[in-house]
Length: 372
Image (cartoon, rainbow, N blue to C red; front, side):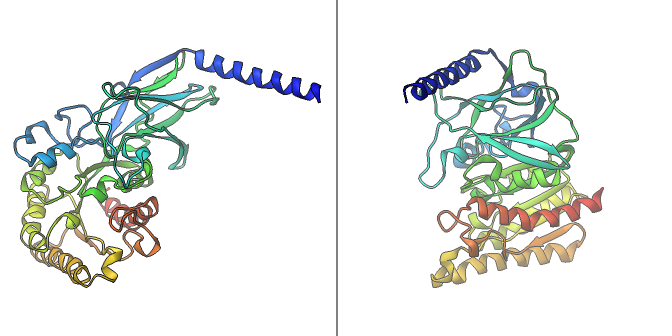
């Protein structure tokens, strides 16, 4: 028994020493901007990782401006032969919400490309800040990696917090590049406009927001302009989206933030701004979900379909004027509500986002294939 105990102590000490040696190896910190930042619509933003142009600050509601400062959808692409990969980033707010996991709200996800368009989730950092003033999060995603070859990676930024700066951590002697440009092809870009659901509320981790799933599966960039509570079809937002020079397709998903009257009176002009400015760019209009409580609440059982009906009437009007390049997606099987697809009766679980992406992805793939 004494020999067994002694051996256990020796093994434990050896493991501790190995871990300490691993941690003592020097890191190299690489600014994400030196690599390849993807899924941004505009370059002229207030901070590197905010989502709408700085010149809109005085044109939009304060709430819209603030929530557009979240970094949702933005990611950094790179390739490295490092034995370890980590991240260090500074949050804008260090927010917390009652109905969303911090890992999705302000964490980051590391994905590994395995070839043949297959991305695998490797790990997620638990976003503990070092202090309330600096709001720095730092973590190691994975160690003991193959150093004999370059591997392609992607890190997704927080969904419901902003990021002032972000660095990728690799071995000090490792090679790191911006990666193969054909992996998440920057020559194809979808611009998605909508509400908190589109923004990613309430994915358990950042890679599970619907736009991020769609981006991986279609191997293209998807710009996320989901603005929590503020996807209200402001004309200035449509005009700004029309200025994105390399947009190949627009997704319009605003119904959850709009009243029936707004769906009736704002939809036509909002979509028409895009169609007139970019007549060759397809537009996909997405209905709002019918929330699970609407099965039992007679008011919402009538009201939610009425909003969709008003949205659809405008689609038919637009389609009648110009049938080319305009598409409509109904709420049927959109978000997995029948399969417990929501956190709180409205915002989606990872299962709900998978349903959303699975419904849109084949539609988007077909539309893009016609353009190519």
